[in-house]
Length: 130
Image (cartoon, rainbow, N blue to C red; front, top):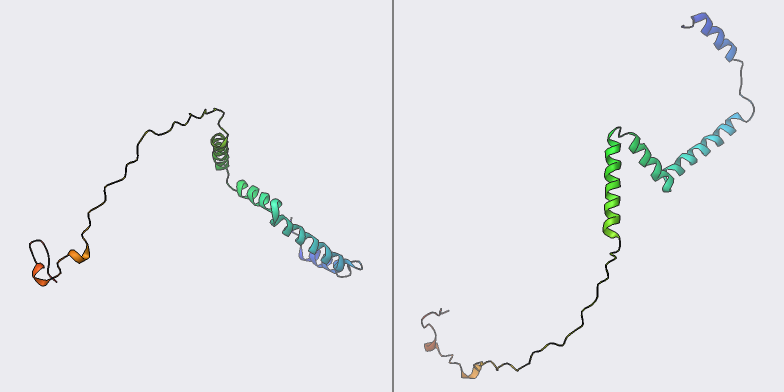
């Protein structure tokens, strides 16, 4: 049922004389700031993290069950892979190596003084002359 124009006029005429009590605006401002601080506290820390996670999960719909199952599977797999192995491994005794070290034959290196650096010695088969 819609109100008529006369009913709206009478209601406005009655409300014109109403005034909030003394200190209402100060209390309103203090309450407003307290609510804002509480909202900011929800955005930070573990409570904020949990709030964001729950709001994200509530928006997923039916797929949240698939995400939950995948997360549970990943958690079980991580526990399985990271759990300590109960098999005791017995170390094998160390046996000394049986080999004989012999010095290698010295390499035959031509001395630079013995090399022939004359131009007539250059340019033979397989060599390139610069």
